[in-house]
Amino acid sequence: MREWTREERYQVLKTPGQISDLHERISRSVWRQTYHVQPVTGLSSDPNGFAYHKGVWHLFYQWCPWGAVHGLKYWYHVTSPDLVHWKNEGVGLAPDTYYDNRGTHSGSAISDGEDLFFFYTGNHRDDDWTRTPYTCAARLGADGKPVKREKPLFGPRDDYSEHQRDPKIVWNEEKKRYYIFIGAQTLDQKGSAQVYSSEQLFEGWKYEGRLHVVGYEDFGGMWECPYIVNISGKDLLIFSPQYTKLPGRAESTNHNVYFIGNMDYDTLTFTPDGKYRYLDYGFDFYAAQGAANVGDPDKGILISWIGLPDNHYASAEEDWEGSMTLARELRIRDGHLYQVPVSAVYDLREKEWKPEGKLPKAGEMQILSDGSDLKLRLFTRPDGSGGFSICYDKASQTMTVDKTGMKLRFNESVGERLDMPLETPLSRIGIFIDHSSVELFVNDGEETFTAHVYPTEQEDGYTLDGHADVRLWQYAPSVKDDFVV
Ligand code: FRU
Image (cartoon, rainbow, N blue to C red; front, side):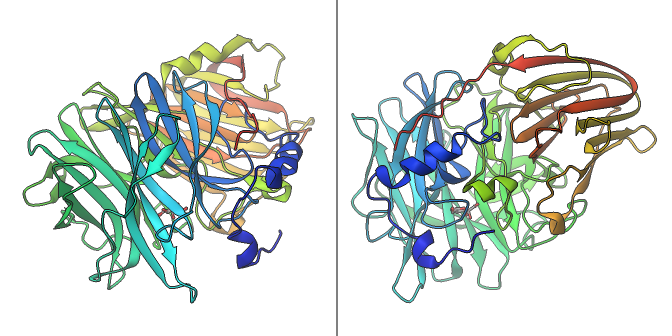
C-alpha cells in the first residue's frame, strides 16, 4: 500500500480541480456504493453533525480528500429528505483557522428550530506537531454552509492528556441547560469523558467535571465520539473505547459500546442497568453518532462509520476507502436496544431477485429461520467454494461470521472471524449488501453485524444449508456520487 508523507496527508485543498481526476477515476470502481454514503474522494470516517433541521437531515463525515489515508480532515456535507436518498453538498467545515489548522475533527449538531449549530474539535498543531484541541462552534448560514464562530468556546484542560475531542451537544429540559460531552483520556491514560454546560449555545460554557460511569472508571485508553440520548425514559450512552482489547473482539483495539441506564446531571453520574454491550458485533463499525432533533421521545436515529481506526481496506489501492452504515432506528424495549434500518430503506426494493444462487450487487436478503443450525455463505465462487460465511449454532445460540473465504483479505491481524451471541434463538436475518459492505440485522434488530467486503467479479454466488426461507431483492441506487466540493 502507498506510503504517505506528512506533507502529502496534510495538504490543504485549494481548488476542486486538484481532486476531480481522482473522483473520475474512483467513480469507475466496482466497489463504489449505491445506497450508502461514501467519500466523494479519498477517505471518509466518523459521521459528524447529524441532525434534522427544517425538514432536512444533515450529515457530515470526516473527510480526507487525498486518498485512503488519515490526514487533514474536513467535514463533508450530505443532505437527505428521508435518511436514504442522500445528495452531496460539498465541504461543510474546512481547516482554515489557527484553531483547526490541522483538522476540523469530529463533533455534533443541534437545531433550535431556527438555526442549526455545530460543535467540533479544532485540531491545532504547532510547527513541532504539539497538539492543542479546541472546542469550536459554527452555525448553518443562509447559503447552506456552516459559518464558524470566530473564537473557540474553550480550549483543552491540563488535567487530561492531549486527547480531548468530539463534542456531543445535548439539551437537558429539566436543567434548562445545554451540555457538551467530550471524549477524553486522563493523565494516567484511562478512557473518560468531560462534561460542560451552558444556558446558551455560543456563550457561557463552564466545566462541570468528569463523567462517572459507575463500574467503568478504568475502561479503555480513550473514549472517542461520546453520544447520549434519552429513549423511552432511559438514557443510552454510546462511545468508542480504544487502546484496549475486549472479550469477543479478537485482536481489535477499537470498539463501539453502549450502556442503557440513567444519567444524573447533578452528580455527572451515569448508572448503567447492566454491563456494556457492543453496538455492533462486526469487523468494521466505529464512531457511531445519533441524530439530534429526531422529534420522537421513543426513537433514536443512528449512523456509523463502516471502518476502524488503524485499519485499511481493499479499495485503498484505488485511493479511496470508507462508507457510512445505513441509518438505523433505535428503540429500547425491556432493557434491550433494538436497531433496525430506517423503514424508507425498503422503498429501494426494485424487484424480487430471481437468479438462483446468485447475489445482486446491491440488494437485500431476508432469511426466516426455524432456529435450527444454519450455514450461509455470501459471495461464493462459481464452484460454490469460498465466501463470507455466516453460521448459526443452535446449541450455543451463537452466530459466527468468518471472512477468510474471500479472495481479497484485509486487516487479517485484527481477526477475520467473530462470534455474535444471541439473546433469543435465531428467527430472522435481514442482510443489506452494497458493492463493498454487508450489514446484518438479526432477530429484528436484537443484534447487528457490519463489515466491509470486496468481492471480485467471480464472487457473486451464495449457498445456504439449513431450514430457512430466503427472499432477495435488488436495490435501486439512492446516493448520488456527484462531484461537488
Ligand atoms: C475517531 C476520531 C475522532 C477524531 C476524528 C479525527 O475516529 O479519531 O476522535 O475527532 O476521528 O478524524
